[in-house]
Image 1 (cartoon, one colour):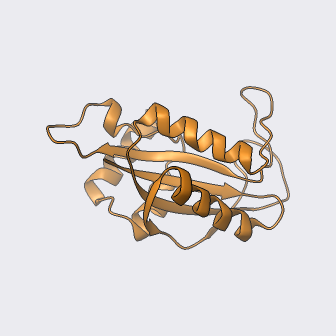
Image 2 (cartoon, rainbow, N blue to C red; image 1 turned 180 degrees about the vertical axis):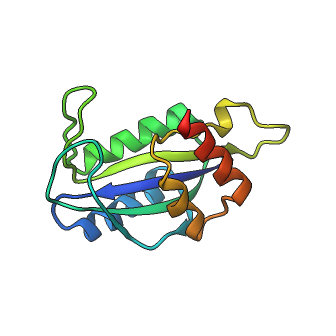
Image 3 (cartoon, one colour; image 1 turned 45 degrees about the horizontal axis):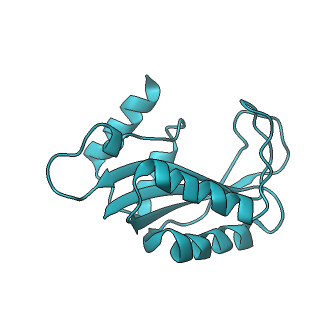
Length: 148
């Protein structure tokens, strides 16, 4: 089993309902929800848009390795109606699910791949630490890697 910290985001439609639906799909297809942060309202990042994002961090236990997990998350986004813009561009979306942090709990010391932060924005560590088990040491490590 592994513990994954995810960040959900939505700025189209009923944003609260979209976050709820994403959590339901995560429980059904990915693993067991162990923690959920409050909802944060944030400005769009990387593109101009009037619609604010609703963001929420989720802590989940999963049996999937990082690449498998990412594929499951992308499938949930598609299931919910997300349309990907062309590569390397940002746009409004019904749902976005990013892996913030992944840590395998299979014994031994985790490899760099198992502990790698996946999301490029440092503010996500604040969300994730609110209702999940990221320690201050892990947050500082994640933020340091994101700044590189």
